Structures are given as structure tokens and as C-alpha cells.
Image (tube, rainbow, N blue to C red; front, side, top):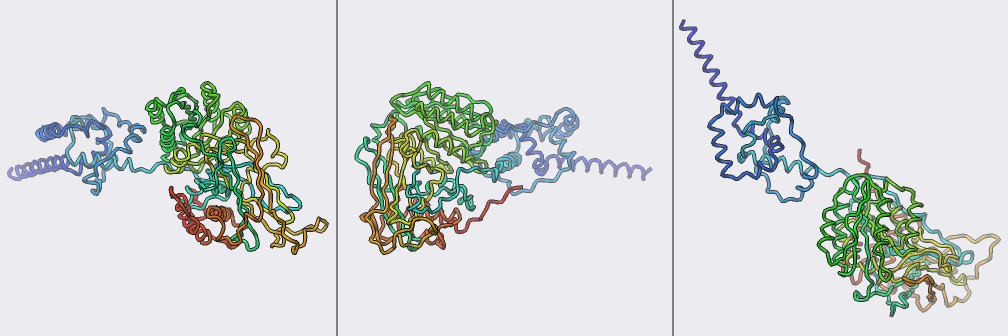
Amino acid sequence: MKRTRYLLAASLACIVAGSGAYLHLMQSPQSQDVAAPVEQKVASNDVAQAPSTVQAKKESESQAQPQTQIQAVAPSVAAAPPPAEPHVENLMASRDAPKAPPATASRAPMQVAPSEKYALRGRTDHTLSRAPSAPLLSQVEVFRDQRERVPAASEPVGRDKFANAPENAFKVARDAPVSTFSIDVDTASYAFVRAQLNRNVLPPAASVRTEELINYFPYAYEAPASASEPFRANVAVFPNPWAEGRKLIRIGVKGYALQQTNRPRANLVFLIDTSGSMAPQNRLPLVKQSLAMLVTQLKPEDRIAIVTYAGNAGTALEPTSVSEKAKILGTIDRLEAGGSTAGAEGIRQAYALAEQNFDASGVNRVILATDGDFNVGITNKDELKGFVERQREQGIFLSVLGVGAGNYNDALAQTLAQNGNGVAAYIDTINEARKVLVEEASSTLFPIGKDVKIQVEFNPASVAEYRLIGYETRLLNRDDFSNDKVDAGDVGSGQTVTALYDIVPVGGPRVVDDLRYGAQAPASDSPAPAEYAFVKIRYKLPRSDQSVLVSTPVDRASEHGRFEDAPLDARFATSVAAFGEILRGGKHTGRFGYDDVLRIASAARGDDPYGYRSEFLQLVRAAKTASAMQPLRP
């Protein structure tokens, strides 16, 4: 009997001890650590925002009735389904909200069996609705912080499309003495090259258009006197630093700068790609910041409309006076990315709004902001080109702001901008947006000359061979120069355009062999003629259909015997040209390398108020150590 009583007493003691341990486990911080992420999902923001006084009261009440807490667990497992995941929009909206650092971020979470995790996730008793204790709040913050630190989806790699052509070759001046091309003021290639080098990756050779690298920088050329004669050509001849015996001819064109009070009104339509591919921070968010800065540069009498496209195109803002700036900025701020891309339909709607609000005495322009991923609607580049060309004839122009990488369609952006009498820029940083849309807003939006063409006739008596550096996608036929029906580039208010020719003087180191049966070049001991070449420029005023001709000789008076004596801007442009040629493979630059580029550019940096030239030096240094190619992600 005594033995039986002893066994019963021992069993009862074990039961009591086990119950106490279980209760302790349920109240321990470790168990709360496990439940914290799950409770945060169920209780959401209401839990975290409970007042501290109510929190303390509910904690004391729950501790006073532990048995009820334990008994409520079992039925709640079957009654409550797993909580829904938080909306993606809520997660995105909370990413930028400031958060206090979690107090228990270093504590390792307790490992729990899958069945126990499910039981905790299904709890719906009053312990989930009460305000959590301090450790629980800490774990809520840890969980939220971990969710927000998950990196965004990586950008695609290797699907960029570029508008480029093989490098220009040397031509024999006696066989083909005339070179004709359209002026180009686009800068997209430079910004894309910079974005790649900032990722420690060399840009694809096809992405490098040397003339766009050169024309990224402003140059202090002599300006024309009036808007009625808006162009002046500046020429210089000097030794080629990367090829002994050869020379460079620099042709610089400076456009007349309109005064702010005299510029025409602007009728602008922002056509904004809001497809799913625009979600990353360097795409739609950057576009929104960029366009908001542009709005601040416009006058109250200017007008803006906004069209978005993603699956279906829609008008986000009817034509609105810039005097209602808050309304415009609010519309821009509310734009979100999502869906496929119906770019062609968006373009139709944008042009329809521009036509609806057409200003015969102003500038009518559609500004397309996209990563170029047109994958729904009219995808044929020629069809889109034809549409943009017809609208250009009606006086509505098109500019393109490209963003993103990996699926950036540079070829389409260039085609649309060139045929829409606009510029193609690539926005990789907020500083680039400021440069294009704030500092250079007048030149970006307001042309002072259209269909601008350059034709250079070389004198075979002084030039044996020549090569145009860059402009491969802008070459024209000889008879296109005098044909006013042939489209060409535009020059904006105050813009500068630079072209460089690499020439072999008669008697210099020839690149192309003479033909056996061709005309013989003059003897090298013949007296040097007075002119190297003759430059002609044709342009139309913005509201004219008839071109005007200006011309200037390239003679010995514009020649400098030493490279160091050449104009400072000419030397800096030469260093940029050499950099572009090296990035494209260095076919014509020989052993000239990045260190040589740095040496020339450093000596010719000159006045650099915005730091563009200093940044160029950093890019050259980055190219020395950049990887040959960005690795493909699995």
C-alpha cells in the first residue's frame, strides 16, 4: 500500500513539473521569437502601432490566466487558415520609410518543427490580438527588415540592341574627295558607356558611337551673332597624337543661344513606359524624377500632357498649363510600373494629344521615356519610323529618353529620335537627368536649325587620304546634301557639334595602296597648296522648308605645327575620340592607350564648371581595370 501511494505521488509530481515546464516554454522569449514573424503577418501594422499602456495592461491580463491560453491553441489550428501574404504594393511603399535598428537583430531564431510552425501560424486566440511585448516588437522589426532587404529582381543581361555600323575606313581623296554626313547631337552612347564602366564592365563595342562621346561635352567655340544666321563653323588642323605623320581636322559648329524670354512656347507630351520592365529603381523611378525636374524649367504658359502605356495605353493627364505645376507633378508621382508594353498604341495617343493642343508658333514635341522594350503592338521598326516621319512633317517632333540595361533597345530609340527631329539621351543617373533636362533644357527642347548637313571636299593636292571619326550611322550620299527633301539632324539652342577627320597629307604614311592603273598622286616635293579642304554646311530654320548654305575653307591659317599648340577644346575632343576608338578595338589608334588618353585629357581639361571633364578622367581610369564582359546570370 505504501509502495502504491509512493508511485502515485511520484507520478503526480512529474505531471505538475511537466505542466510547469510547458507553461514556461509558452511564456519564454524563445517561443515568442518563433511566433513573432507569423504574428506580424496576422496582426499587420495594427499590432505595431498599439499604445504602450494598453500593451502593458493586456500583458498582465494574459499572464494571469495561462491555462486559458494553452487550451485555446488546439481548436485554433483547424479553424484558421494560413494568413495571406502582404501585398507587393505595401512592401514597395514601405521600402523607403525610415526604421529604427532592431534591438535583437543578432539573436538566432529558434528552430521549430514544421508541424509546430503550422500550429503557431494558425493561432487566432486573444494572444494574437493583444499588443506584443518588447521582444515581440523587436522580432517584428527584424522580420520586416529582412523582408525589405531582399534584393530586387536582377536586370536581364545580353539583350541590348544597338544602332551602330562598322568603323569608317580611310578613303583616297583623289578617288572620293567628298564626305557628307548629317549632324548628330545625341549623347546616349556616352551615358551608356559610363553606366557600364560604373559596373566595372567594358561596354560592348557596338554601344560606342565615338561622335556621341565627343559631343557629350560643351566647347567654347565662337558663337554666331544672331538667330537669322544661327551657325558658325570653327576649324583647326593639328598633328595626330596617335599616328605620326597624320593630322586631324577639327570642325566645330556653334548654334545661336536663344534667350529665355525669347524662346517659343512649348507643347509637350510625356509618353511614359509603365510596363513591368520599368519597375527597377534605375527605370521608372528615375524617369519620374527626371521629368519632374524638367517641369520646373518650363514657363507657366507652356503645356504638358502625360500618356502611359503598359498593356493598354491611357491618358494620365490631359493637356495642362504648367501654371498648374502641382497637378502635373502629382500625376507624375502617382505613376506605377506593371504589365506588358503596347508602345505603338501609346505613341498614337501621345501624338493625338500633341495635335489636339498644337501651337503653330511654338515647339510641339513628344518625349518618350522607355527602356525600349517594345514587345506588344507594332514591333516593326520601319512601320514606327514611317509613322514618326509623317508626324514630323506635320510639325510634331519626338525625343527619346532611354533608361535601364540588359534589354535596352538603343537601335529603336535612335531610329525614332533621328526620324522625329529629336535627340536620343540615355539617363543613367539623376545627375545625367539634370544635365539633359535642366542645364541643357533649351538645347534639348528648342531647335534653332533643322536638317543640318555637313559636306567636306578634300583637296587631293594636299590630302592623300582621310577618315571621318564616328558618324557611321549618319552618313549621307553626296547628292543628299543639296536635296532639301532628305532629312538630317537638328541643332538646339546654344548647342555645339564637333567632327574630327583623320587625314594623311600628301607625302605622309599612306594607309591605302595606290592602284596600278589609277591616277597617280602628285609628287611629294610639290609645293603645298593653300587649302586642305572646303567645308559646307546646309541647314533650315525651324519654320522653313528651304535650306541655307554657309561655307568656310580649311587652310594653312588654321593649322598648328604642334599638338600642344592646338586649341584646348580641340585637344580635349581628341582625347575623347581616342578613348572611343580604343573602346571599339583600337583599329586605327595603334599603341595609343588609356594612359595616353589621360595625359592629353588632363592637360586639356580647362574650365570645367559642371565636372564633366573630371568625370571623363575617372571613366578612363575605370576602363583600365574593367572586366571584358558582364557574366551571364544563371
